[in-house]
Image (cartoon, rainbow, N blue to C red; front, side):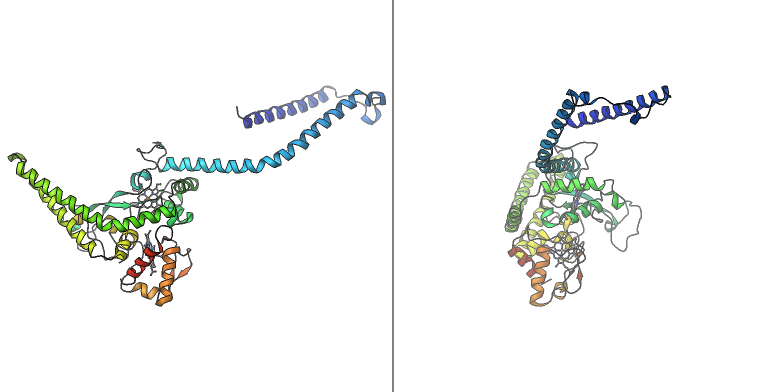
Length: 405
Ligand code: HEC
Ligand code: HEC
């Protein structure tokens, strides 16, 4: 039994005792309706009795109680702030634990089949990013909306299933403040696989506290800005090497597939030839992507790594090794969740030399919701800030590139 429970029981017993005493007094009044003489007419104890042992005993007890209070009040005064801090910490720890359970999927340690929401399915078990399948509806104007898909439906009018990159969340609080992350989890990202989870959205089932638990959990898994900047520097430095390595792997796969065709018994030949054709397609795509990246500026590669998922339509599901898997992405920077940056839009939004500085500030530090930026911009708070995940040099490279769009 905890101290708290013991105190509750003690209080309960005291209240019962008071009720019992009152009841006994009331009942005894009923039983002796004869009025006793009023107290001021009854003779009281003589002085000898009053000033005897009884008085000393009562005085002794009073002194004892006064001492208990005199000691316990300062002790309480000294201990209470620590107790409050402890309670706060424990509250925070429990919130993070609840958040971890909500975030978990079957592969996570914290998984609880009745509570977990499976964020980890898309964002990775440790929140370092992953992907989600999404079905895209056809957009070609010649397609009949809501028409049933049959064998005769032309390719452009068929829904396509794509693999949509879900961003890493172990840096999300380096890019956004808490309020914005709370907003995203509550309302989701319409038009992407990210669902709305909050009751406030009218679609989700989670109350404010659960969303808060999720944000606290995310806060507990954030890496440091230094680590984040190192990771983005590495990704930028290695982008071209990675494309070259992918092309080598694809070349090896073709060589292997050719050998398999040579060695295939007649009944497996068709299958082996099909695999060879696939491997050759991948190789062609890998070589084309490698050559494209070799001719792409660092600023554009950094933009593709950091910004294109929001500012370029279809970039989240573009796979350079399988470019025909979905419609090709829209023009780089042509707008998606974030606005179209092409056609000199940024030269107009942030004109001149002071404009460049303001644009750097906007991208590096962000602008609070409802505050103006540039010539005619009003921030909605949805654009992340990048000064904690990118180096100043990278931000400058990206902005130099953006201003050529
Ligand atoms: C079905 C897959 C899926 C699930 C489940 C999912 N997400 Fe997402 N989430 C995504 C995708 C995809 C995006 C990126 C959307 C985009 O392209 O703008 C995203 C974006 C986010 C973002 C914004 C990150 C940024 O930098 O843009 C946050 C925060 C987030 N998710 C948190 C969560 C949390 C918390 C949960 C669980 C309660 C969750 N997600 C569950 C797919 C998912
Ligand atoms: C999570 C999605 C997202 C990402 C990632 C993102 N942006 Fe944005 N961006 C937005 C949104 C949304 C806006 C619109 C402004 C607003 O809502 O406050 C915006 C606006 C902008 C603007 C102002 C455009 C104008 O003319 O009003 C610039 C410049 C910009 N982003 C640059 C970048 C750069 C550079 C990066 C990468 C380093 C980037 N963005 C990454 C979502 C994003």
